[in-house]
Length: 427
Image (cartoon, rainbow, N blue to C red; front, side, top):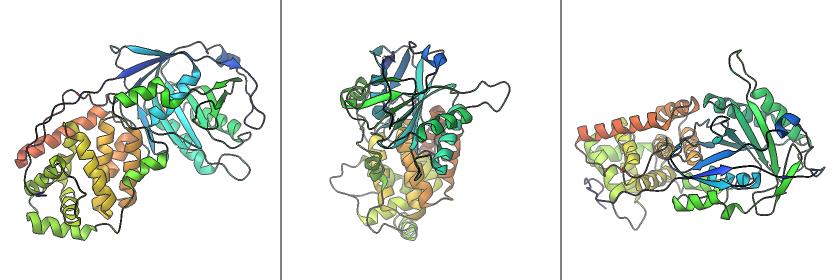
């Protein structure tokens, strides 16, 4: 495959629908199993059980703010009031939507869902491991991660929060500690900002059909099948994969084989393209647009890894996430991330993270950033993106950066695939 040749691509724009869901949570009162968690009635919150919620799924949702170390993935969906709503009639259906919101089925996890009181919308979703110590309480690192997650969600403007604990272990000690932690973390640090309101804490053993969920107010019910939920249907229609586990998702960026080192990448870029950014970018575009039936050779991986070490090439490559070949570009960068090592792996993984952020894929964004910073914790591109997302940068701002990449490509004289005008970006 001649990677050095510039490729011109003709491809139809691919539009993907957006679905919205209205949720009115209900439930039948029952006692929580004693070994699972204590029931903590709250008359103030009980009075709010009839309020309605809206979930908007899809690639046009606002993208995730990411704290790579504290919680590896969460996604934020934006408001598009003109889209029709699909009604969901129970709190169980809201819980069944969690795998579609996260992009995988969580296990032994704390999932946070933010709620806008004015619009009724479910906004940001965040997940972190539910770590227990030997006595069944929350581990110190788990407490820190949850507290940081709550803080980041507040940065996104959250003022109300649902918590879902997915765990098959006894949580008698963990649940009161979790509730106290959420309330402490949500307490305002200033006189002008209100406290973050904890609407509910809901527990379920696992995300499978028929599992009994129970909330802290004593309501309970069977979990509908997440695989047949309206949220999952929307994911299928949009072409999104909901993985059976988080591990299945992380495997997309797991290191493969001995890997291609940074020195070999630099040598390949110098030898094959004389270090010319135009030639290097053309190689990247050619690899994205080529109809490959086999994996890349090590020589090709080295050349492409060397290309991504050039800042101009990397910035222009980010613009591929705005084109009709965005999926192909993401798959290429993921393959490179698996096979490269050191700084080139960090560069490829950062591009995967950016592609995920542009399209509203929070889980992939966080996992890719974690892979990038693990490969090279000093890699500036990954650091800047992680800090920007943690500060609540909107996808539109990253889109501006990607559009600058298009300008860079034009300046280098390399034609990128056509802009995707029908597939709305996150936000």
